[in-house]
Amino acid sequence: MTSAPIRLGRGFYWQELTVGDRYSTYGRTITSADISTFVGLAGMIEVLFTNVEYRKTESTLKGEPSPGALVLSVAEALALNATAQETGLAFLGLSTLDIKGPVQAGDTIDVEMEVLSVRQESNGDRGLVRTRNTVRNQEGKTVMVYEPLRLMMGRPQ
Image: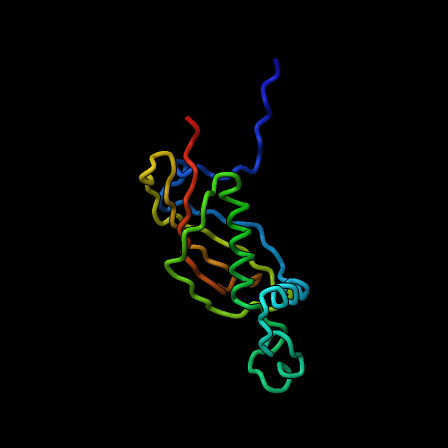
């Protein structure tokens, strides 16, 4: 009888995380298509995101900037794929969200996560995990820092 193969890529159960643990993700490049799709979908028709001539002549921010909400969304996708695939149950909120600098089309971001707190949830088989997620660009500059709280699965009994 053959045993089932081990599935690679599964996230951590809350009991496997310890305060002070640090993890980093692969990078992902933010493209012009990402920005225009996100801006259109979200209805963010601000001229900063939709008017090249405005950015050239009137804006202090040149290039093709990405909305902070897009950067957060991509950072969350990177973090979840790295640590909570199949084990993350709910995103419960942010205690902080600080945008430290712009992300432009063509920039590549990655995320470093540090576990700040881990505790058993009142249900007993689930846990609450807070991390500090530092988003950096390809030059290593911090562009965003946020602290999400997640509900995570516990180890199967």
